Amino acid sequence: MDISGEQHLDVKHDIFKKRLDAHGKVIEPAKQDSVNQPTLEKPLQKHGGRLEHNETYCGSCFGAETEEDHCCNNCEEVREAYRKKGWALSNPDLIDQCKREGFLQKIKEEDGEGCNVYGTLEANKVAGNFHFAPGKSFQQANMHVHDLMAFGKESFNVSHKINEISFGVHFPGVVNPLDKVERTQIPMHGMYQYFIKVVPTVYTDVKGRKIISNQFAVTDHFKGGGPGEGHSLPGVFFFYDLSPIKVQFTEKTMSFFHFLTNVCAIVGGVFTVSGIIDAFLYYGHKQLKAKLGKNT
Image (cartoon, rainbow, N blue to C red):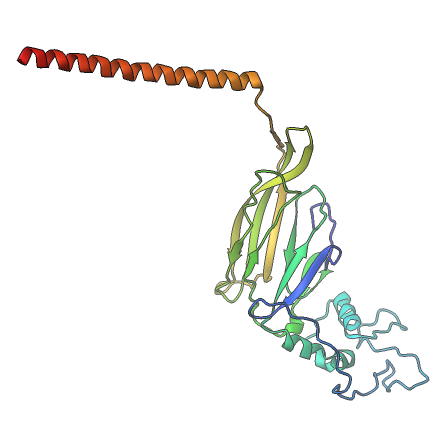
C-alpha cells in the first residue's frame, strides 16, 4: 500500500509461500486419502433443507446476504460476506460450509508452524509499505484490517529472519543492511517495524554499461503492547520512502601514462629513501671511525 492510495491485498503474483514446521523444514502438501475421509452430510441449502441430487446448490450467507439471491457456497464466501458487513465470524464451526471444509481443524493443524516467503514486488516510486501479517486482510471503513478472530489465539509469534531484501538489481559494491537480520520475539504481543530510506543509484562500469538500481538505509523498531495499551497488529512491516538525492558510481581505468607516472614516482621515492639511508650510514660510520682513531 502507498500514499497514492494503491493497495494490493494477499499478493500472489511472483510471490511464493511455503509452510515450515517448528524446525524450519518445508512441509509438503498432504495427499487426500479418500478411504479414511469421514462421511459428511449433504450441504445445507439457503432455504434450510439439505441439497438433493436434482437441485442447484445455493448456500446460506447466514444473514450477511447483500441480495435476495446471494449465495455463499464455501467457507471463504461466508467469511467475505461477513467482512463486507463488518461482522466478526467468532465461531466458524457454526457455519455449515466451514464445518464441512474442516476450517478450524486446518487452523489447529497449522498451530506452531512458520512460513518461508520469497519473490518480487512491483511498487510505485512513492512512499508506502508492505507487510507480512496473519489473517485475511480487507478494507473496512477506509481502514486496512486483518481478520484474526478465526484463529482463536491471544498472541502470535512473528519472530523472523530476513535472508535477503533489496530495492532493485544487484550492482558491484552494494551492501543491503537487512540481509541476514534475525529478530526473536520475547513479549506476547507486538509488531516489528523497519523504516527504510531508498536512495536511487546509477552504476556505470568501465564499458559504459549502466545499472539503474537503489541502495537503502534502515532503522528498526519493535512496537509492543504494554499494560493498559491496545495490542498492535502482529506482523513485520516495512515502511519505505524515496530520497530526493540520486547517487552515481562510475568505474574508471587508469591510463598508461598515469600508470607510468606512478611507477616513476615510486622508483624515485625508493632511490631518494635509499640515498638518505646510505648517507646516514656512511657519515655515521665515518664519525665512529674518527672517534675510534682519536682514542688510539
